[in-house]
Image 1 (cartoon, rainbow, N blue to C red):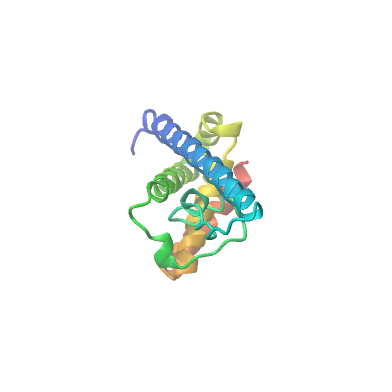
Image 2 (cartoon, one colour):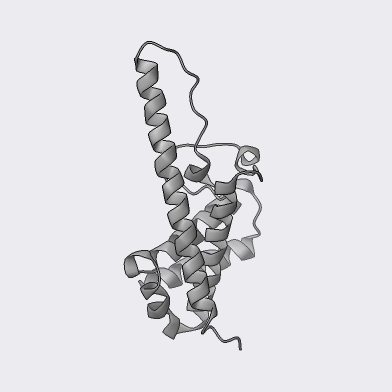
Amino acid sequence: RVSCEGLVPLLCAVMTAVGRLLQQQDEQEAARQQQQQQGATGGGSTTPAPPAAGGFGLLCSPRVSESASGSASSLMDGSSAAGEASIIEVYCGMLLGFLVRDCADLAPVVARQLEGGSLQPVVGAVQRCLHFYVSTGAITEHTKSTLEELLQHLSSCA
């Protein structure tokens, strides 16, 4: 059995830091898009802005816009720092989720160390991961069931 004593704080800290970074990038992108829209209404014509990298990340993290969509290839742009950060956030969340599932006494410990004092960041990360893999067809039924069961467990802990 692996000791979670040092692992949980590390994963929580990384997940929180990356989440803040993505949030800052989303806010900057929203401000940039707003400026472009204001410039367009001022008589000039501009090309519509591409979707924010932080808005979706590689794992379809709907941070800025809930309704935007894109092809899997556009989401898989490995040069995107926001996309890479999104992957880090999601996998930290998944690791924390499985640790909480396997060690029931960890749920409140993890929640206290995350933004908002709840497991919601972990739940969101697992949801984004599941959504991405289902939407790209890159998941087996067994893995899909495992992630769905993990989400049910995490929701019951909240």
